[in-house]
Image (tube, rainbow, N blue to C red; front, side, top):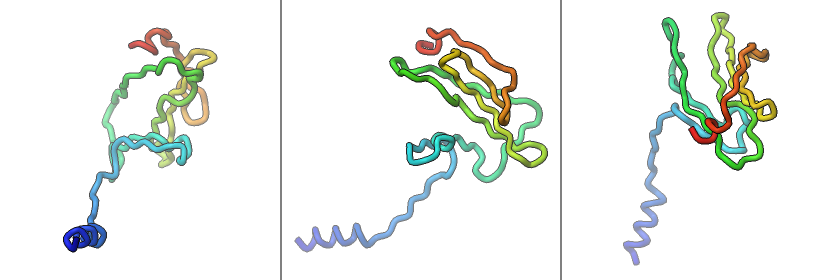
Length: 122
């Protein structure tokens, strides 16, 4: 009995420190504002700088049997030359069945459609 009490006391009295990375892919739930629920931070200490061009690619498919498919696919936030953040958004509009690219607060003029079968199966 003394051994059991000692073990329980030791568990509560011994302090442990957890070390985890503060970057990478993060998911949050409804308690966080919508724009901050999912984020990917690849550079926790500094900005990523590219010389020349770069490609951003990912796979996307819709889960079947949902009533609504609307909203951000991704938001890319870049630091502009003037030091201000500039966002580039890809959004999906279910009513029009189109993807649109938004830069800042303005429509970029870029929109496209993807065949519905490909969105659900490929």
